[in-house]
Amino acid sequence: MYARISSASVVGISAFIVEVETHLEQQLPGFVVVGLPDSAVRESRERVMAAIKSSGFAFPQRKITVNLAPADIRKEGSGFDLPIAIGILTASGIIAPEMLSGTLVVGELALDGSLRPIRGALSMALEAGARGFRRMIVPAPNAEEAALAQALDVHAAESLGDVVSILTGKLAPAPVTVDPAELFEKHRSHHEPDFADVKGQEAVKRALEVAAAGGHNVIMIGPPGSGKTMLARRLPGILPPMTLAEAIETTRIHSVAGLLPPGQALVTERPFRAPHHTISDAALVGGGMNTIRAGEISLAHHGVLFLDELPEFARNVLEVLRQPLEERRITISRTKMTVEYPCNVMLVCSMNPCPCGNFGNPQHECTCTPQQIQRYMAKISGPLLDRIDIHIEVQPVAHHELSAARRGERSAVIRERVQRARQRQAERFAGIDGIYKNADMGPKEIERFCQLDASARSLLDAAMQRLGLSARAYDRILKVARTIADLDGSTAISTVHLSEAIQYRSLDRQFWNV
Image (cartoon, rainbow, N blue to C red; front, side, top):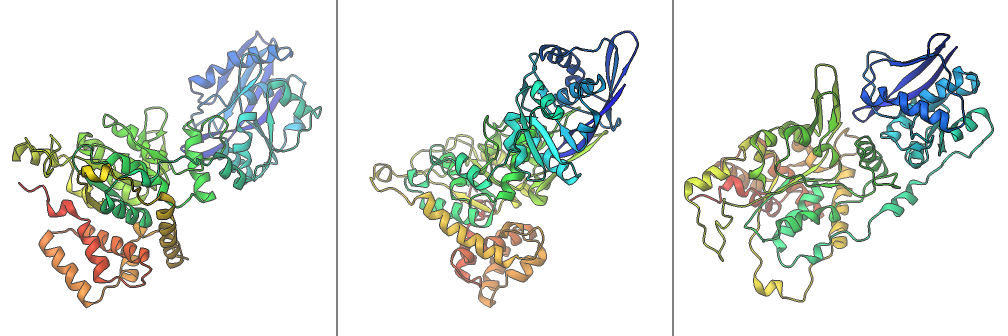
């Protein structure tokens, strides 16, 4: 007796269809799963056997062979429990084979027959809809997530018994439907950190506003206690709200990584990831031996990746960021597979100006030698700094500012200005594929949209000579100047805009020179 049912698995954030073939033969009882299953799939035999018996069905005392096709791709995860169980019940005659036509089934089984959630349900639903499937049966906690695809009917099930009832026609539940707008409002946080909580630091706030308006990378340099981390954690609050397309792509990454909070089907807030400086290069950009997982840079997709105490990160960890920051995607290659993850992030870094942290601090004396300061700063390579558009010097906040009752400008007010600037950029780049904000501009777009008059050109030439800037830093200055002009509502880049952009190259000026 033979049965075939469709299921799915994921590689990276993309899903692929897996045909689960089940064959029952009159031989000594046995249960084998073939088709390059990983350990979690091989262990499904015990879960499937217990779940079928707990659900009140007879487990066939025959030799059972389950094949997961295509057989040359490694199958991972526990989502094959349910399709294997349904395949056995279909081959046993409990479910009619024609009821499986156009149906995709995924789910993890508990020993009592109940269903547990799986990873990557949204990616699977998108792939199933693209492949022409009519319906998809998933565990109830994954139903809203899968329904976001809006590509096929999604049915939620609580147990193996529910799935059998759906497939035999005894139960006809209505397909799960979701309204993305309602989900946005349901899961949106109304208690995010606000820039109004930050006393003083008006120049730094202005620089972060420019960074948010153009999607530029930022590094903040200042002594301990000057508010660098506090400012960085408030940056997502001034970024434009996520679009539905951005939310779905971010949700796919977090779903595959198993990071969606219980009961939340959609990521509605821009991610903020702040890994510790002991992180490995594979954990930062993604990787693994048998299973390639998303790294922190991909988990921060469409959000902020914050690296605090930048010089404390290992040199090899920082260097792997170069290419992803330029291409906005990370390709991870192993001998058996190649996986690509998106990583369109704003990189925000902070660091002290020296090992003791007090170099340039008017309130405390620095105890470091010139050689110690140089070794400390040399931990960050020039090519990496070139990829950071805005360098900000953060000075300690004066006591009278800390005790002042006046609050700063609220994040909501700053966000409105950022959104207006982003809208100007969207209109400017309409019809240009892959360019959505000023930080995305390539050489052609810079030449086209960053024209300078004679006085501005003279100023930039002088800055290039005095600061010894690279060609990449030259482009960064023009991008930042374009963003400042957008915030100002200007179609042309003036010397005022260019001057502000040049001052955001503090590390090029070697302000720590001793």
